[in-house]
Image (cartoon, rainbow, N blue to C red; front, side):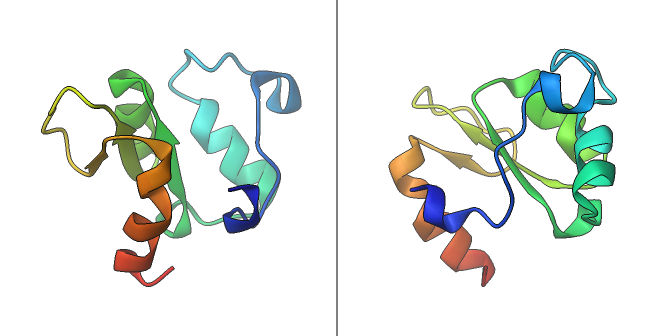
Amino acid sequence: MRDIFRTPLYGPDLVNTAKEASGYHSRIFEDAGVEPGEAVVVDDSLLAVAWAREAGAIGVLVSAKGERAGPVIPNLAALPAFLASLGV
């Protein structure tokens, strides 16, 4: 699955910002040199996805609960098909 990612997987330690902070995604995009509008953030936290969207990224929620918060996939196995639907 990691072969579909263009950059390393980020964690709070790499950008010196807690994942539970609203500026986390902006720091990642800046560090990676990625325009937020070109980024896709996948998370199982509705709040983290909302923060990614606020930063300008496409936020994808992983949830099998049938939530309707923008793009939602039931599991990570569905990610390649979702990305393909975006033309990524």
